Amino acid sequence: MVSFIHTADLHLDSPFKSRAKMPSGVLEALMESTYKSVGRMIDFAVEQKVDFIVIAGDVFDQSNRTLKSEIFMRRQFERLKDNGIFAFVTHGNHDPLTDGFKTNWPDNVTVFKENVETNELISSKGERVLLHGFSYFLDDSYENKLDDYPVNTLNDGIHIGILHGTYSKSTHKHERYTEFNLETLNEKLYHYWALGHIHQREQLSDLPPINYPGNIQGRHRNEFGEKGFLYVEGDDVYLESRFVPVHDVLFSEYTLDVSTLEKQDLYQTIVEFKHRLREKGKQIIQLTLYHDGDEVISDSDFAEVVELLKEDEQDLKDFVWIDNLRLNFMHQDQIALLNDIKRSYSSNDELFKEAVNSMYMDPKLNRYLLPIQEMGKEALLDEGEERLKMLMRK
Ligand SMILES: [Mn+2]
Image (tube, rainbow, N blue to C red):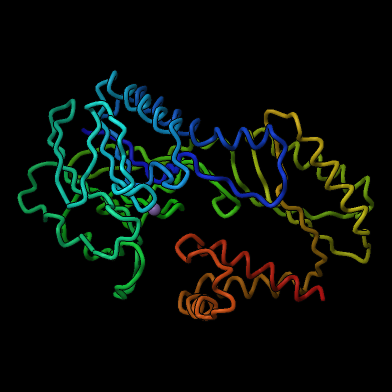
């Protein structure tokens, strides 16, 4: 048996994006959140006595890298060293080798260089583990290095591929970051693929496991849901991976049906709703209210509700900060139609791709869009839904 942690995209010191001005308590919690998440991951590694951890790129955020994040990371690596745990690190497009990483990590840490290389370790139980990977040298890597990954022909140990890149179903070759398809990875006959770069957790294959762990802490509303790392355990027959959440601040989206728009009652309804969420710890939420009726609320009354809700969260340790509060007037037939449209786009890949392509091809539009790899399908569908709702209300 061998056990290890697979993580990626820590983006220490990444700036946090929010629509609304946050009170200092919330902002501070956010700034510390990634550190806390990483700290919890290292606690777990030590408690579980894993053999090693793999970081598949983007430990740092190139443009925002601070001394604090380097010192912090070194301390975490030292904690691993004190417990006989190794670390294997590749650099990604956000922390390429050219950026001159002068930090001296302790000697339990192996950093992959710009050419594909294999590093070995013997686990505490005596198994041989071979890790194959490379680091980005420049932030843009047009060169596909997958051909350089050796094929496991001898089956002489547990083979793990580390790759920072974008999964692609197509054979289109000119994407910005290292693209790969499953076929290429499968041909290497490895026991596990530790991927990085895409911030949404995803298992691309079960046998062998080919996993994106997602990032360890959400940074904005599009990185919602639980965040953490993968704990992997097994042998050369099967490696089982389990998600372990360690985020400190949870980004979430909610909808709430409200029966009244009378400002005092509306405020109270939202307060109670937040109260129910509070047990999940610190949260930043997008809240969409649905009102099915003829009642209206003036802009100034609504603004007052929003202001008071914000004030309530100023000094709370386990805050439920509403980053964006929307009010939608809906009728049942419209809701049914919307659900229909959304369902067909999410279940039909071709239809979805067609819609997204036309958006990204439009020069007037595409400069306002995030790079497509940073926008998950869910997030795009949600945006589309919002636009439709706006049109319906007119
Ligand atoms: Mn990346």
